[in-house]
Structures are given as structure tokens and as C-alpha cells.
Picture 1 (tube, rainbow, N blue to C red):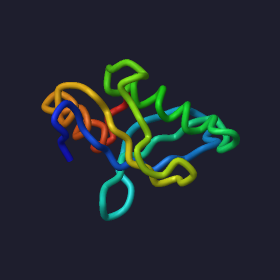
Picture 2 (cartoon, rainbow, N blue to C red):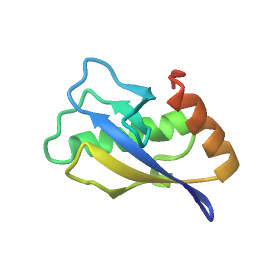
Picture 3 (spheres, rainbow, N blue to C red):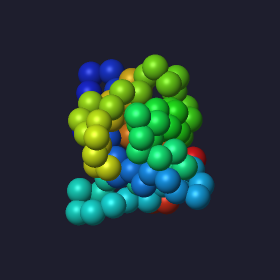
Length: 99
């Protein structure tokens, strides 16, 4: 869903993965799949998610915020930036294009 100056994205996190990767969709709501090698301990996975999403969307880490689901594998993140550019990149990532 588009925001005034960015985008909110549903994310499904796979902590403890063998490799960090962004791409593909999960579930009926088509959440973006984010695999991170960090474990879900002391916020390490959330920090890794923020970092990898920022890289995938080409924005600063400070432009990415976990809005919903701090302690869940299903999250909503807010990404600041041009909504049109971010939406195009999201569609590419949902189709499984590598970050």
C-alpha cells in the first residue's frame, strides 16, 4: 500500500537461513519473503531485515522501519522514498528477482 512518501510492505521473515535473500511471495496476501542468517534473538533478525530490505530497495537503513510484528515472522515495514519507484521494485522482488 502506498504512503504519502513511501510504501508499506508485508514481509514474511525466515530467520536463521543459510543465506540472506529477498524475493518471492508468501501466502494469500503475497508478503515479500526475506531470509536472513541472523537468529531471532535480541532483535538481531529485525536489524538484519531492515538492512537487507534497505539494500534491496536502494534506500538508507534509516528509511526502513518495522511498523508491525517486532516479535513475529510476519511483519509490516515502512520504506521511505518515491512510492512509484518502490512499488516497481516490490513487484520485481515479489516475482522472485534477486536483490
